[in-house]
Length: 435
Image 1: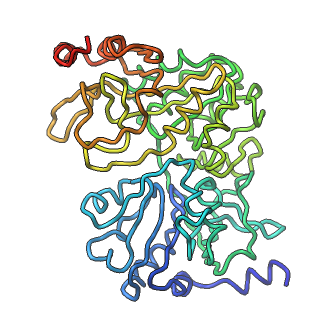
Image 2: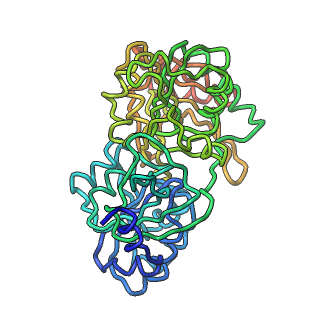
């Protein structure tokens, strides 16, 4: 049979497709802004017929009805990165969290540590050769999908056709569900955030001409891009990109010309942003999508000279330990790609590993708290250890911790903390005999 005949023979409805899921199955679901919404809704409706079905996912932007109380007896989420829609369920014990480096996320499925029975994925329409692109989310999906016994694909005519290691042939699909809806948008930054802009200015000063950059999720990495228009020949090797890269490309700043590996290409795993970004990556040969186990491999990252990694934190203690995945014992997100890129950049020739964050955070009751603390909260997760931290940036400046003693680190971090907290930090550091 030719691929068109195969395609037509496997077209079905979402309700019929999820009927192949059996009790006890492990289901992988594409995440980020590529959650297959129609299939997920059909699975929630079918859930009362199932027992002990596990849904494995990473960050997922979308509804939370699949983790509503009581549903965990039928389908239970195992998230490997906690997003807002499942955070409450995780912390109430109705969903599970598996900590893992983002570089190793796909390998859990590929190497059968977590064997997959069914993959729910979201793809573009097939090209003339019968190949569908995974679109806006390639890196975390390609390997788990290929390792699954059954692949159910939402084929969305609104999904961009992205290039690189992003294609799956229609013959691999067990069921095909045609859909048409816009890809979810996820803006990275709020306009007019003066604190983020001050931090971004300090970060930009650390980025040399010819650097290859990684930008983690959040407003600060995206804000940095606005401060780089005077730079030359920048490049990108990052698990994700957002809208800010477009203007740098169009300004002739982001050329990728001096990258050590994949020169001339933006190497990326997935995108988060607006429809403008999704249209821009569509069939754009400048953007080369790869599996996350490749993009986030620290030993691949390190091959790029002048590798700059920009990531954030929930809190940092005065010795340099970085918590980025929990608030005390309450799980908040996950390790993501932070350690992969901080370590990879530190091993790069001329590399610049950066943790950038506001000096304070405001609690729900209005209390302002320092994010630079004498000691992390009890139960806090250390995502990046004190041995791997080089630069820490707040709106008050830059602290260089690499090669510094504890006494020197304490002084560096106090100097970039909020002025209202410096005296107390110094007092506690003295009591600990650190200074």
